[in-house]
Length: 286
Image (cartoon, rainbow, N blue to C red; front, side, top):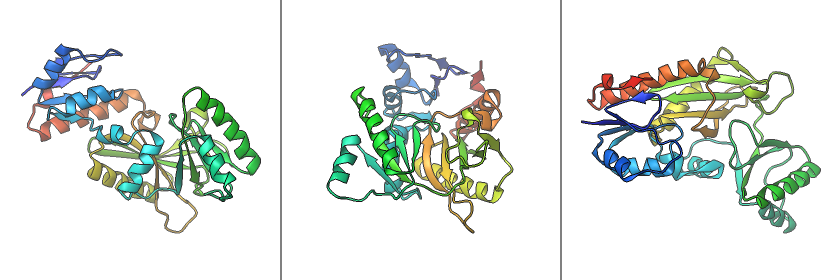
């Protein structure tokens, strides 16, 4: 039984560090011989499919990452799998929305609503549209962005969160929850890198709900390494966390930093191997 690792931080019976290069014939030979394969977070679609099609056990499970790519792909995932999420519309480009409005249709959301650009994560490319003039300004910006070859955006109903975002991080069988809270009152979009605060103690009742929903997402999809962001109408008496986004790349401050994250990940990989009757001691850290 052979364990192959493509992760730069974990050695195994065989370790391959791809970097930015494509798979070679020798790489594919080792993939074909492996019984279990450890992938990096920066795994490409080429690498994932090459490993998955052999029938080897693969960690992390990235099938849904590549089957439902981008923000619009995730909206499709939430719809097809009936995961509760805010009302969301996907637009191929700014022209689609202009044509929709020119036909006399009303905006699918009342003001305010969120506009989210495709291809960006961790709170970037998200804008609160308060009025018609703001929408026209952003459509102009989107037209310029599309000219550079990056089309696509979402419009999404506002959930009255008070700027608080609830995150559940799945690492193997473990789920860690915490809030990303605004650094100052009045904010609707919270980003930790721009002054947001991490809070593990606030509204633990809602954290428990998010934990259970994250476990359900993981159980049904097999996703075992990702951060799920939830929107919660915190002033309602019994609100349900709504899935906003699944991040396969995510910041680690809420987990206690990078070193702690890799400890959690190492333990998760060891458990995953043990469940498959493979020796977890054959994985080493660097």
